[in-house]
Image 1 (cartoon, rainbow, N blue to C red):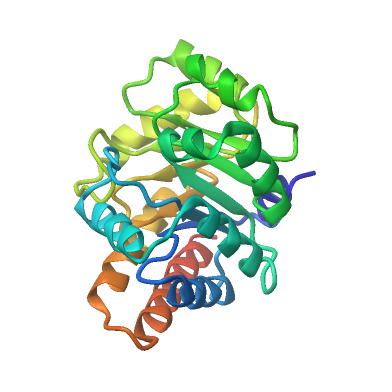
Image 2 (spheres, one colour):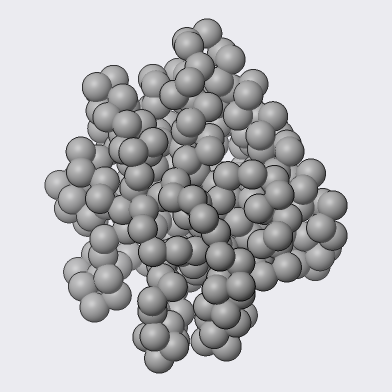
Length: 267
């Protein structure tokens, strides 16, 4: 059983939900990013989404776009991201999902990316701009030891949901709204309708909701709907607003703790 599957199984058995946290690898530098992630893990994070910096992150809003820019300016490469995974494995067993666009993986090499990701200790991959119809050239070279997280949008037809879910492992990332990461204005009723359709199609695979979720109150409202919630831009706003010197790690850790507290209150 993969680390991702084990985490969701344990949470379900205890009636709990997963907090999935996204940060861009190497923002604002690799040493500071490692300290931020270390504090997130200590504060109760269930799954880490480690973003691979990319020059044209079209699915992301301005906050995460700027975080990618800072990491690229700091010299972070795919090899550097995988090196960070190795460092994280020295202090945490939290499942790590590499969140990337296809270009950095294609440039690195599909076989090499799979081999080095597994060796480093990554547990899964989410490729934002690679639809199922085009993904065999990548995943066809992989074994079962790297989960492939698939995306479902609010506009995805029910029949297509079933096709996507059939080719997903780990969990399904359900996008809460049309638009980019960090957008505002959650429509909980609409999310409930999409989640209900998705649950009929996913054969028990965990569902995590992301995009536009930034407060403990929103997390608590979404807990009854899915198996987990994904937070990203809220963490990157803290990182962007903090000067160097360790404040970001403490403040991000505090937000992780408050999100987990909201989840515990739901239970």
